[in-house]
Image (tube, rainbow, N blue to C red; front, side, top):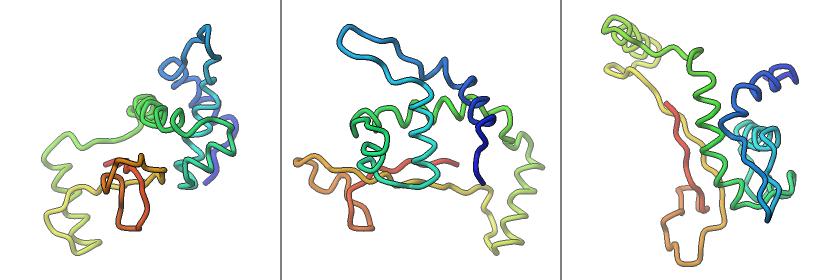
Length: 142
């Protein structure tokens, strides 16, 4: 499902205070709009930092540093719309749903993650090496 321009602008107004940086004598800060565009594009497509760097003309290190900041800002902006179980009955209902739908008794949640492909530092050995035979870092959501 595509995000409309109106939806994007509304999300931007919520996250802008958390992701806005000031210009310095040495450089102009990236706008919150560009930061949000980059991170949403990454989350929607799963493309590499290299691709993002070429598409948006922003360095890979800058992109990798802003991803968790923007993701946190988006989560904080939308957390009122995300329902988290508060009672034992709600947790039991979720467990029953996993048991019936997926034949997975005792489960009351699921994680999802995203591998972000990167060029690992020369001295990193296997720290960033994943099961897909590439170097990446992983982000997880529950």
